[in-house]
Length: 399
Image (cartoon, rainbow, N blue to C red):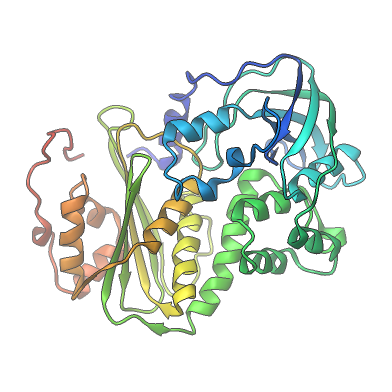
C-alpha cells in the first residue's frame, strides 16, 4: 500500500492549479503578522515575511484558531492564505546579528498586523500546499524589506528578554497563559525563546510539531496524575470535508490516531494509523505532525477537565478535501472535545454509533489500528459486530 507521505505528495501536487494573488516586484501591504522559515539546506535556510497586498488588520489570514470555531469555509481559508506573499532570503539559523532576522523577530512578537514594504528580485509566483503547514501564495527572493514599528505581545516580550528560560518551559508557560498556539509557534520559529547561546531559527514545519510536542508532554505529565473516567465517551465534529470521532476509554493514557482518505483524488480508499501505549513514542510518527497535533488537543481537554483516559481518534477525509496544514487536525479535534460527548457502556456500542455517522465502514479502522484491534480483543468483540450495509453512494469499496 502507498505510504502516507507519498500519497500526500500526490495530493498537494493536485492543488497547484489554484491561482494566488498577482503582485509585481514591489509590494506594500500588511503582515498579519506572519513569517515562514523553510527547512531545505538547514542550517542555511530561506526565511522571510508573509505580506498581504492589503492595509490594516489582516490578522484573520494567519489565525488558524479562529477559522474552525468561526465556521470558515475551505474556500475562505484558502482565499486568506493565497493572498499572502512570501518573501525569502537565505540566512543562517544562528545569524541573530542580521538586521533582516531582527525584523522577522519584530513581526513574530507583534500583537497587531505590521505595515510592510518589500522589493523582490522577480515578481512572486506559485503556491504552496502541505499537510504540515498552512498554504501560502506566491513567493520570490526578497531584495529589500522594511516594516513599521509595532506593539509587542507582552507575554511574548517577557519570554524574549528571559535568556535563562528554557524554550520548552517558555512554550508551556505561554500556552498556560492562553497565548494562541499560532503565536507561540511563530515566536518559537524565529528564535525568540530559549537560553541565549542556544537560540536558533527553526523551520516552520519543525516548529509546529516541536510546540505541539512540548505542550503535549507537559499536559500528559499532568493528566497521568488525574482519575480515570468511568465510562466510554465519543466526541464528534465535522468540517472542511472531514469527519472526526474521539473515543475516550476508561483506562490509563494510551493513544491511537487513525485517518482515512476516501476518493479525494480518484478511487482511492487509504487508511493510516499509529499509536503509543503508556510510554511516550520515541521515534517520529510516520503519520507526520498531525499525530502530535491531535494528541495535544485531546490532552488539552483532559487536563482542563482534570481527568485521564485512553484515546482513539478516527478521522476520514472525503472528496473535496484539500491539505491545509496540521491546524486542520488540531482545531477540529479541539472543536470535537468541546462538544458534549455521547456516553456508552462499552467499545462495541461506541463503535456502532460511529459506524452510523462515518462513510467508511468501521471495520477498516479496526484492521488498521493496533490499539483499537487489541481493545476489541480484550472486550471479546469481532468484526461481525460492526457489519455495515453497503454505502448509499456505492463508491466506497474494499481495497
